[in-house]
Image (cartoon, rainbow, N blue to C red; front, side):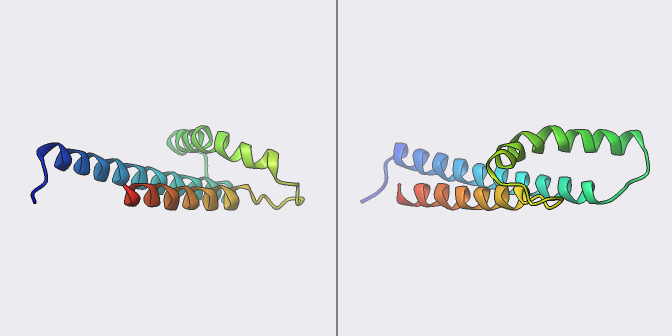
Length: 102
């Protein structure tokens, strides 16, 4: 009872897609952590550091802004990165469950 070539190719494609999505979510979580940490620390001015901070802001801020609109204000405490990371972890688990059920 062997698998056909099409089945093997589909299984390999699904495995690759799952791995890609897992890595993408992991990298985005890392970018959010780096963005939050860089906002806490006052770094000396450098053109390269400025470009990195601008990149992090451009990548992370649109996603975090969604949660800032939904969450109530807690004064100087911003919980949107925590909620955003939790949502990404849940999304990763849902994607893994979907790929494992197929």
